[in-house]
Structures are given as C-alpha cells and as structure tokens.
Amino acid sequence: MPNQFGPEYVRAIAPYQAGKPIAEVAREFGLDEANIVKLASNENPFGVPESSRHAMAMAVSELGRYPDANGFELKAALAERYEVPAEWITLGNGSNDILEIAAHAFVQAGQSVVYSQYSFAVYALATQGVGARAIVVPAREYGHDLEAMAKAITTDTRLVFIANPNNPTGTFIAPAEIEAFLDLVPSSVVVVLDEAYNEFLSPELQFESAQWVRKYPNLLVSRTFSKAYGLAGLRVGFAIAQPALTDLMNRIRQPFNVNSMAQAAAIAALNDKAFLDKGAANNAAGYCQFVEAFEEMGLEYVPSFGNFVLVRVGDDDGAGARVNLALLKQGVIVRPVGNYDLPRWLRISIGLARENAVCIGALKKALS
Ligand SMILES: *Cc1c(COP(=O)(O)O)cnc(C)c1O
Image 1 (tube, rainbow, N blue to C red):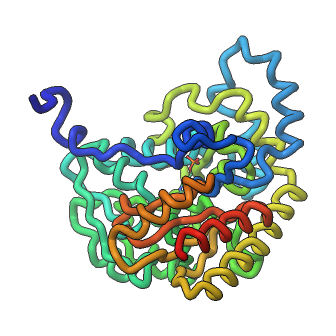
Image 2 (image 1 turned 30 degrees about the vertical axis):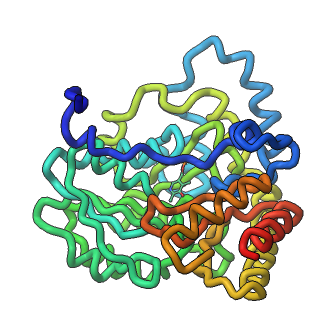
C-alpha cells in the first residue's frame, strides 16, 4: 500500500546519499578498517586542527548548559574576519542547515527555486522540502550557466542557489560574472551564494564576496567549517546577509542549532591560518597528482577548483557504479554520482599523497 502520510511533495523526495562510512565498507567487504582509504565526502585529510581540539577540551565542562543561542563569540570572530556587523551573521548546523533555513524563510509551497543541473544535491532537497517547484537550468560545460539562470527566473521565483566552486563538478564562476548576474536578478529574489570550497581557491581567485552583501540586499553568502577547516563532524556553517534576510533566517532556525563544542572549535579554527595553509598546499599538490594520473590513463576529468575531482571512468551508464564497486573491493571509497545524472563519472576527494596514490593504483587496477 502506498504511504498515505505526509504531503505528496515530501513523499517525492529522494533521500540524500552520503559517502559510505569506513566501518560499513570494512564490514561489507571483509576489510581491515586501517587499510581503507576514504575519499568520498570532501573531508579534510588532516582531520581536526590541534587548535580546535584544545578549544573543545576547554568547552567540555560547560556541556551541562545549553549553548549560547546567539553564538555571540563565534559571530564576533566571524564579523571581524569578514568585516561585517555581527548582526549580519546566521549560524547553521553545518551549511546544509543554512540552505534549509533559507528555503523555509524565503519560499512557500507552489513558488519556485532556480538552481543549476549538476549542482549540490541539497538544493533539490531544500526546495522539495517546502513544496516549492524546482527550475533546474541546464549546465554549461558542467558548470553554472548564469545567463540562462537569470532568464529562467519567473514571477514566482523567490530563491536562487549558486555553488561556487560547485560540487560535484568543481567548476568555478569568475567574480565579474557573479556580479553581472546579481545586477540582473530582481531585488525580490534571494540569491544564496554557497561558497563551501572558497578556502581552496588560489589567492588570485579569492574575492571577498562578503563585501558584495553590502551592495546587494538580496544576497546571502554561505560558508562552512566542514571542508577546509576540518570540522565536518561538528556541523558548523554560517551565512552573511543584510538584516532583512538575517532577521527572517533567525526566526526559522532552531534556537540552539549550533552546539557549544562546535562554537568553540570553530572560533579556534577560524584563526588557525597555519592549518588552512597546510590544507591548501596539500590540496594543490594532490590535485596535480590526480590530474597527471588521469592524463596518463587517458581519462577525461573536469578541471576542479575544490578539494575533489570529477573523472569519467567509462563510456556506458553502468561505468560509475561498476568502477565504484571495484574500488570498494580494494578498500577505496569514492563517490558515485549517478544521483547527479552523471552515471559515467566518479567524484574523488583529494586526500594525503599516500591516500591519493592508493586510490590511483586501485583505479588503474579497476580499469585494466
Ligand atoms: C559540503 C558542502 C556544503 C556544506 O556542508 P556542511 O557540512 O553542511 O556545511 C555546502 N555546499 C556544498 C556545495 C558542499 O559541497
């Protein structure tokens, strides 16, 4: 009997598929956890920064109390770092939470949300979760076609999601193009600029998108501590937007959506420049390692600006799943992207040099 509970738009949601946990792969394939390499969720290969460990140890004794619902200290640190008033910041339980809150705060059932083909899976989930209609704009060379996205906006559009760099394709949109897009978008439409991978951009490509927020009252910039800062398990993200947007976000969010440990760890990581620099250098070297291997193997890949690469592993629609299974059997976890309508491709996160080498070796074996 079909499920009679809940609205039709909730029943239509395809649940998010996360990267396989190491313990699960060890169980399923009879492998030793210590020998498994996980390059599936764009996590930081260096793990938790030492500075955050220390801050969390200090925060333990306060866990009997509720967290600061307003995240005063973390917001103050972010406000200083991004040169915006603390009142412009919304904290999230990961930036996924920010994306969800935005959908709930700005869109009602029946209205529409615009995002790109091959963009982050959570945009579809957040849209469907409020019963809104998705307008999915065909990608251009695996990235956002901002001109087409501007044209796709209709009278009932309330929200646009843009990922820069994009996940799972790794494509990057130049600042001038984003600014041109923001100039075209009606001021009644909220633009969420999701910059989960911003910290991996080389310095000449880094731009202070937080400063655009001053110019565009309908812009919300979203960032996370899950990737470059190595705190994915703690769940901390944040948004920067003018008070009109921030005020509505604040009404929708759960009062204690970011826990005390996460707040303490994020403050420490934010100022840990050495950790960020180490991660960026490792990522740049690891990217070259993968790209050289792909070129040697004759594999097509999408040039990436994030901490992962999308690579085509075959010419038939079974290729991604087949090669993924062959990698799992060798203890290498990557991300199949059939759910993104990319069944011939795999997304591989960039790890430590040793992990990358194991993955490349396993890929060669899987394809031979
Ligand atoms: C990983 C990712 C996020 C962030 O996830 P959280 O862990 O919830 O902060 C947001 N957007 C994109 C495009 C991502 O790839």
